[in-house]
Length: 91
Image (tube, helix red, strand yellow):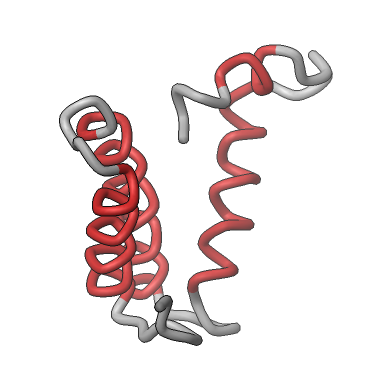
C-alpha cells in the first residue's frame, strides 16, 4: 500500500506536510475499522492491522505464486488482527 502510493503522496499539494497528511489518512482508515468512541487499545489494534498487512503485502507479493491465495491470507490475518468478522464470505 505505502510503496504503491508513493507517487500519489509525492504529488499532493505542498500546503500540508506529508507526515500530517499521512496521519490524517491513517486516522480515516482507523475510523473505518473501529466503532465510534473506540478505546485507545482498539485504535492501536486497527493501526497495527493496517501497517502489518500493508508491509506483508509488499513483502510477499513476489513470493506468492497465486495472488488470490495471498489476498485470502492477508484478509484472514487482517480480520484476526482487527478482531472483526467479514460482512460476507467470498466464494
